[in-house]
Every structure is written in structure tokens, then in C-alpha cells.
Image (cartoon, rainbow, N blue to C red; front, side):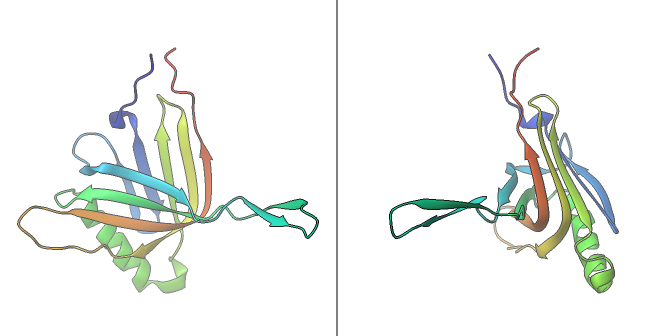
Length: 151
């Protein structure tokens, strides 16, 4: 019987203005964790007048990564600094972050290159502490899912 645990997962962000690992005790990831998603389909199917179809494999591997952090996470300050520095330096540093999501137990691995902040997260001030959602645009996402088997 295989068991999944978020505790086995780590996400690293490295770029011109940041080097951080999110995962494990004290990083402040919320229950929603990390969400890598592709922006476009890998296949476009076109139907012909005679009922035949044509498949077109698209070259794009772009996507997004959503990172959900508790308001109290120390990673928010690192991301805020990186966002502001990347933005202040314009095209010299924008979109040069690398994000790696890895679960050595399950064998899942995402290698994401040329990542840029989509926007600064909304930050509502309310009765209860909130979740900050950092969204990154990813130019190239290369995923690999493992078998999650016990050796």
C-alpha cells in the first residue's frame, strides 16, 4: 500500500533575486500547496469535411504554478523582495527564475524554466489570517510523475 504525504514534497525557486525552498516545517505552505498547470493542450484535433481528423502536436510547454502560502509564512517576504527586484531591473532580470518541484518518495518531478511572477498577490486584511497565492508564468514545464511505490 502506497502513502502520499505533502511532507515529502519540496519546491525550490532560484533566480537573480531569490534562492528559496518551500516545503517542510516552518515554510508556511497552506493546505492547497503547489499547483502546476499547463496553459494549453498538447494536441489540437481538426475535423475534415469527410469526417477524418488531423492531430497537431503543439510545441508549447508553457503553464503556471500557483503557490499557496499562509499569511505568516516567511517565504512571503522573500517572494515580495524578489518580485520587487525583478521588476525594478526590468528585462535584465524578469522571467529568469527556475522552479523545481520534487517528491523523492513518489518520484514526481517538475522542472520549470524561464518563470516570471504573474502579479503580486492579493492580500486581504480580515478577521482571520489569509492565504497569499503567488502565481508564476512558466515558459517551459517538463513534468514527470512517479509510481509512488514502496521499495
